[in-house]
Each structure stands twice: as structure tokens, then as C-alpha cells.
Length: 131
Image (tube, rainbow, N blue to C red):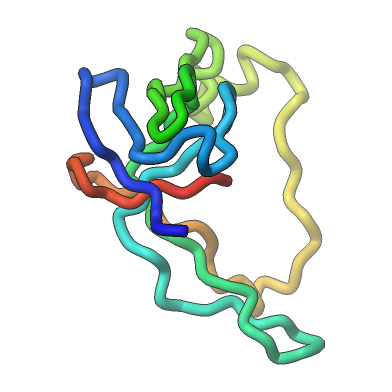
């Protein structure tokens, strides 16, 4: 099966993917537009096997219409509250004590996590993956 890619950009809120029901896509599926596949493998501490990489994401979309060989995907909808929650200083005012607590991890083993989302523009031909 070939990689899914952006086939058309309809607007700043909608794109067309070159895959549809032939790839098992369904309305509501979450897709990520990839800027770059990660190059730092995550290694299983028990087996030594590579578990994959953390990819750099350009954007996320949600499938809204599925055809046999293509699908329309929309930018995610958000509420004003979820937009405001992206600002840490507003979280306590909105949700009181519902703040995510730290885990008791060994700080010397913190190696970083997901790369920052890419600020690169989305283009026809960009790779799309289902998460």
C-alpha cells in the first residue's frame, strides 16, 4: 500500500487525501501531516528493539467525508475554552485544581519528548499518516 498524501488543498480548513475507503479511512479518523519522520529511535529497554521514532508534525486533520479512493479532511474544531487552556497561566482560573501533576521521575533520565510542531507550510504531496 502506498503512502497517503495530500492531493488537493481546498481551503485553509480542508484538504483532500489520496486515500479513502480503499485504505480503511472512516469519518472521524484523526490524521497527521508529517513534516519530517524522526531520526532518533526510541529503544525498548528490555529487548533493545527500536520502537520507532517521534515524528515532526505539520498539522492534524479529521476525516469528514470518505470516497472510494480519496477523503476530505478538515482542520480540528476547538472551543474557546480549549484554546485558552493552551496558555498555562489561564489553566488555574478555568479549571481550579485540575492541573496535570508531575510524575516522580528520575530527572537525569529525561531526554525530551515530542518535537515541537513544525511551522512549515502544508503542501500538496505531503505525507499523511493515521494515528
